[in-house]
Image (cartoon, rainbow, N blue to C red):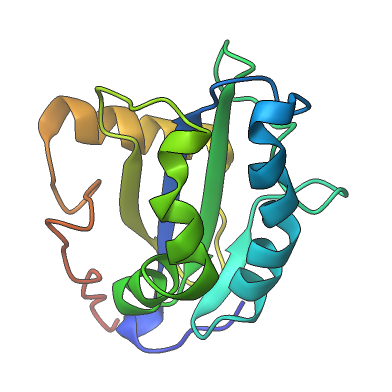
Length: 158
């Protein structure tokens, strides 16, 4: 991971979604079929730094909650803009528009953003803590969303 822009900071993001059916159910088969190509596009996207995945190439078997239907997406990008460009364009945007076919509508916030020092990857449990913070406190520099973003911290030279 290299530091680019943002004074040596990268943007971490976590989003969660509760599937309408188990990952091997025909109801969500089209979503499963989209995972590999959309993840490949993310991996090659400008500003992409890292994403949580198993050897299978996705994170569908990683469960941070006591609910097997709750999937996570945890990644790091070089800026809010590059993440937003990926999320809201191309094949990812097309899949996002179909979200209701595969995922329940959650009543709580399901996406959180925060700044991390370039080169650091906080453990997934820390990402869940950031989501909890956003739900409890609303957007702050420690945990925010796309509607209310904050600039990367300013690091003082020593």
